[in-house]
View (cartoon, rainbow, N blue to C red):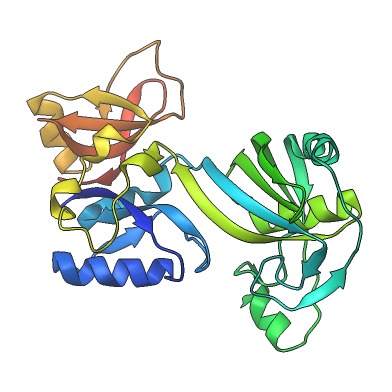
Length: 283
């Protein structure tokens, strides 16, 4: 069993829960997801099955979300599960929200929530927070490719926002920082991941779907690296982890390549300008 499944993680379930369910349903131990979703979040969670778990690092990292932000209060976790830390009676209008969102476009610096799984000195941030210990949380650079207002409820002071971003972006931090920017505070109340790499929410299936086994895809259909079709002689060398001579002006030195034989992945490799060197073998 070798492939990837586009799963829709339901709200209230951890990413680990999803892996456990599929492990039992498919009767296979080797299963992993390509990027965790918080329990209160829902949406696209690509799951790799069998030796395809060794491909996780090669899937596209870009994500797209639909986030609902509640203005008027901030929380310690930056979402609806944390204690309220600040409140405001200020009301904002749609134009103000749209104007503030423009400042979050492109490369930005954000500080991850203290209630997150990022490790500092071998300890997760939320462990420091729960123990009441202070720790320096370093800002990080992320890229917001797209951020726009989908819907604004002026009466309830809620904004529904579409965000397309790079790996490592904390949508909770955007909700908190947006509230600070507007001077009314804010926190995340709903989060739906609508895309992860080439996986779209429209094609995702629930973990309890009867079509799980039929939905296992060939990773070749969803990996974006250049694919090289190899011949029988090259296939034999790859099986022994041996490099082979290859000349191409279309491949950049250092590029990762997928070596394909009979519509199946032989290996992940790297090109050094003269040879293709095998990195991970799947034969």
